[in-house]
Image (tube, rainbow, N blue to C red):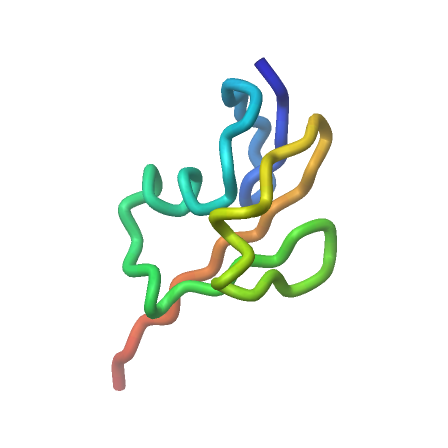
Length: 67
């Protein structure tokens, strides 16, 4: 297992887990979600190619409309 920080919380995942799999497991709408990896924005097209690494920091933000 590898440990990553997702939205400020330590979480463990099997090796070779991708950012796309983390986002999917969170149950958020991909089209309304942005991901920051270690302080840099990650293009949605890169999510499936980006494997988690031990100590990686992810911020997953979903946009919500309202008024």
